[in-house]
Length: 107
Image 1: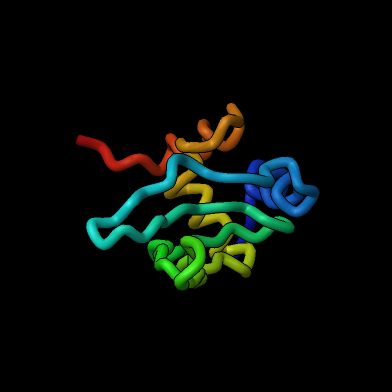
Image 2: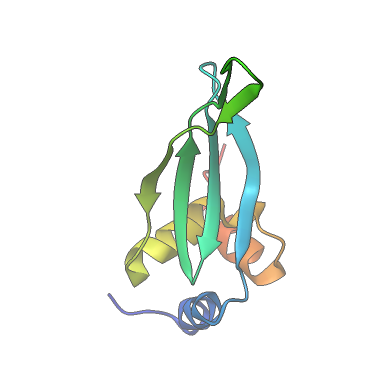
């Protein structure tokens, strides 16, 4: 796959940590789990954390944090570009927004 100059630049910025952090808003499922997308160390990933629980142990309330799962990881350059095409419009960067807009489905 031949990469354009724009794609090479976006991948370089992604690897450098320019886009680190959460992408979009988190989503709470009907079961109480939370799902979110995050870029960490230049690798976009989708995570899911189950609902936390509370119980009384006889003295005080204890809280058990829900189990966290990695639902999907976009590790290769092709996968990273697919992530930027699909979710780039959610990011706060003009270059990524413009790249993502090129692949927006036409109505």
